Image (cartoon, rainbow, N blue to C red; front, side, top):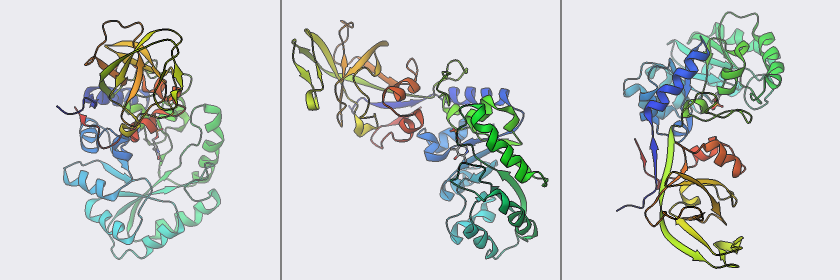
Length: 353
Ligand SMILES: *Cc1c(COP(=O)(O)O)cnc(C)c1O
């Protein structure tokens, strides 16, 4: 028997969440599947989201793999090409690439062929991470339009604080002003903007986290948004301990019992990707019933309170997040966001359908 931890992926929930995105916009949908589809598995996720018009990712080898598997959608490299070798693969596999630096423009100029490349020009509208400054857009657009290898240009930007419309308005205005003179498709919206900021939908929206069933907002739950959790991380209780008053649990003994109590030891720790910073009180389900973690998370184990769960025993099922327990709630208790929990699941956790 393998260790009982596993992450189960609900493919129908992926399809459902894509429908939620679809109902929220008339723009084309570029499903973001970077970071191994936020930990859900690249190929299974792309297959479940096959109705999307495009996929956005980072690694050119993943894009080639999808093409070779028969995916016909627009495949966009979100950070563009890292070398001339990458660029050579674009035409052969009909991949679209972001261009966000003068170095990438130079790579494009050195491109020997005349095939019709699809370029997504990234404009820095205020996040100050990737993209050309608004005042450089006319010169860059001029070069791209004159370039013999470039067939189509899409104009894109990314929001720094898409949680509230107020945070997006300034960037939207900056972007709209910079791209106003050009007839080209536009792409701005991540999940948050897709759900709350229709003025920024443009021609292509780029949802990521919402497709995986997690909320991009602090003030609205995934359930309230009609999203279904896609990944459910489960394990089992592998030992039960009876503590006496005053006895403490785990490394550092950070939790001590006030009175006699029963605790369960769960086969899941930070070596699996569970957050070590999840403090005592982080929610967890045992046999489907809500309880809390106790003490420090160790590499392979964590402890849970079985006080109110007299039926729980070795072998009882434990849900760390997913169906029945929102990953957003767990993330909040650990001082992080669901994105991180999903991506840092480690290789030793089997991901199954
Ligand atoms: C990751 C990413 C997205 C998706 O963001 P979510 O918040 O997960 O919806 C969209 N656009 C770009 C450029 C990204 O890097």
